[in-house]
Length: 154
Image (cartoon, rainbow, N blue to C red; front, side, top):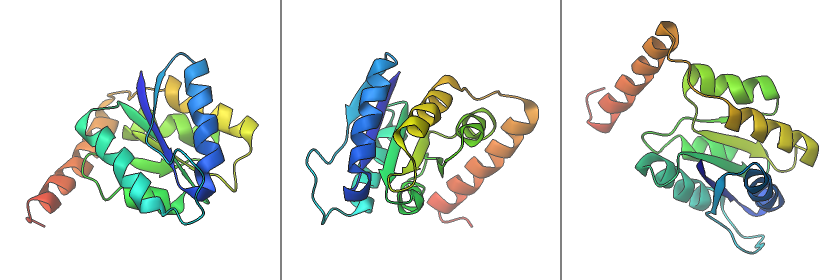
């Protein structure tokens, strides 16, 4: 699977580890930056780059890291077509995909240790949307709201 990865200064190490983990799992990992540590990096810049890539289909999924994962998630979810969530446990990392069709996993670079990051990425990448009626019904409600918002109908 083609997966985009990005992070800000606080997620820089997590971003690099995610690239390594994904490649070791056999995925095509695309680095959306930053390519060098810069303490002045702002998470929205990299979140929007990655979210746009996911929304446009350039990559199928994304992994996004900032200090807590919160800012990255908030910013990424502003892009229509993105369903990003912070997951710091393996259940949420796979359940978010299975039930909610989550397409960006957000991580807290200052919170998640490397061993847990490996487990989270494995859980996220091995999951797929179930297409069960209840999950599809709920996702369609979210997508309809997104469409209304995008067209000014809310």
